[in-house]
Image (cartoon, rainbow, N blue to C red; front, side):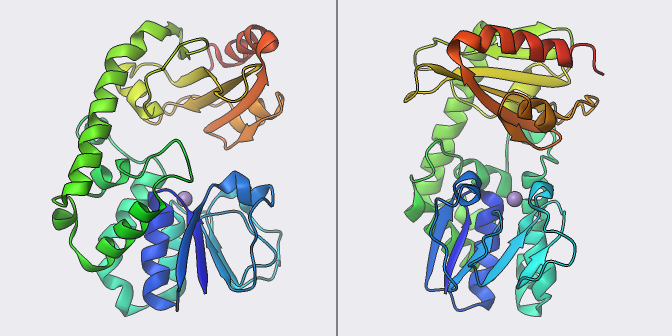
Length: 294
Ligand SMILES: [Mn+2]
């Protein structure tokens, strides 16, 4: 069997569990949108985890509310709206052999549902620290590294894993990138009431960091928006919007708001891409929708 899983920490935790209870010959990593758009070949020998359903697959495990199957739908595996897909897999097998991964699954719950603290953001530790080594801009990057992480998680304790030179090198680099981001991002960011807007349009070599770094810098905003360029599509601008995970007072359905502009997402986070010439207008409209919505 082949396992096709999401390239993030939850997807990797699913792989650790499935690899321990099923006969898996090969593990590959995918981005949810590629599965959604049917750009990935899926066969009856594939198990899918933490990704949208595909009708050809042998088994499917997921937890994203946007992927909820219709009532009575028949498939092998399990779906439940849960903090992580790893939790869905763990509960499905209910196998004493998997008990040693209990802490790992707890960590996947926290990380995948953004149930983290400001302290976790400022100085990540344990599984949280390992998870930042898996963040990457390019899905095709680092598959071999991900396979090594899966093997380590199967055999080693987290403290031992965090001493492996390759892991140390990766988290040291990431923490350095975050520090640079925290120093540079204020130059491109302004607070508009409850909205923190970071405008990276036209910025050469923009600083890179996850949105929770923004919330650690502007803890009072309850929603953030980012506008950015695409390397391969100069006439388009990307817009991403998210509720502040540390100040969950924004009641606007972001996925529904983004859908108006051809994008989508979840209740708390979403995005769209628009024509560059329209971007000022769209940004103004989105700010108008979000402003004062506490
Ligand atoms: Mn997940």
